[in-house]
Length: 96
Image (tube, rainbow, N blue to C red; front, side, top):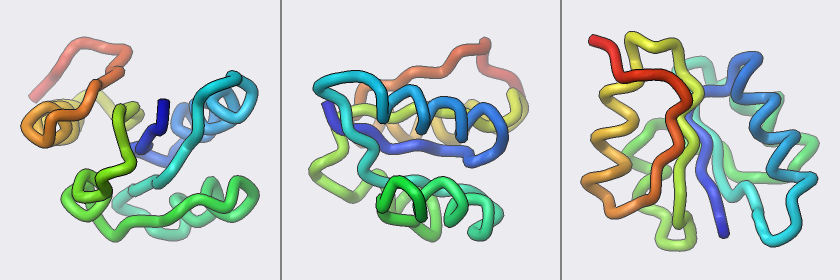
């Protein structure tokens, strides 16, 4: 399964590392409001850095999305990914 990652903070970094260890999964793209943070995850894994969620969700090869943002930002990423027809992993409840 091919993944996109929304949120490149500490938890996002852990998720990227975990995907690298799981057979049959591949991180395709990452996005974060801080593009430098996204680049720190993308560089060692050689994945695409997207400027925003919409750009990342427009990539046909992404089948699933991991939302690793602070809880108050979950709703935007989760709902956008679901609307784009992607599978979604969000570890904590949605918050507004």
